[in-house]
Length: 212
Image 1 (tube, rainbow, N blue to C red):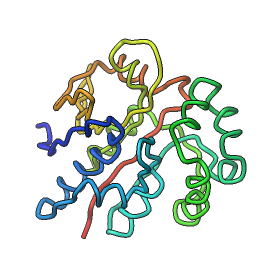
Image 2 (cartoon, rainbow, N blue to C red):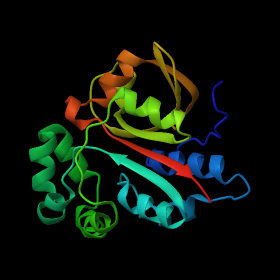
Image 3 (cartoon, rainbow, N blue to C red):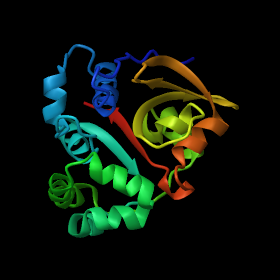
Image 4 (tube, rainbow, N blue to C red):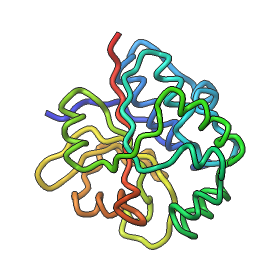
C-alpha cells in the first residue's frame, strides 16, 4: 500500500522545490506542526532567486531529531576549499556552471565546513535497491534529478523530488513542480536517466525518518 504523504507544490518563483520536499517530510512525520515558507527558507539557508543546497536543511532536521541518511559521491572537504572550481571538475561545464550561477557558493562553502563535522565526508553512489531498502525501513527519500530529463526534454535544471514507493517497473513520487505533480508514476528507466545525470556517479539521495 502506497504511503499517504502530504503534498506541497513549489512556489511561483520556481525555486522552492527543496523546501517543498522538506515541508512534505515534516508534515508526514510531524502532522500536528505547521511550517511556513519563511520558516523553511531560514531552516534551509535559502537565498532569494537561488537554488538551495541541502546541507543546512539536513543539519537543522538532525537537530530536530530526524534520522538522516545521505548518499552521494561528493567531496565536501574539497568543495569547502575550492568552491566552483571543484564543481566544474566534478560535474562538467554544463552542470558546474549552472550550480555556480544559481547558488551562493561562498555561503555553501562555509556551511560545508560545519556539515563535515556532523555528517563526515563519505562517498557512496546510491542504487535503486538503496531507495527500496530505505523506504522499507520507514524513510522518505529525497532525490535530486535533472528536471528536463525526467520529462524527456533537453537541458539541465537541478530539481528535488520526494520518493515514497516503487514497484517492479515504476517509481512513485511527489514532484513539487512547476507545474506540480502529485503522486507521479515514472518508469524506473526514465527516473534513473534523470537521477544519473550527467553520469551515474551523480546519483544521490537523502532519506529522512523521525524517531522521537
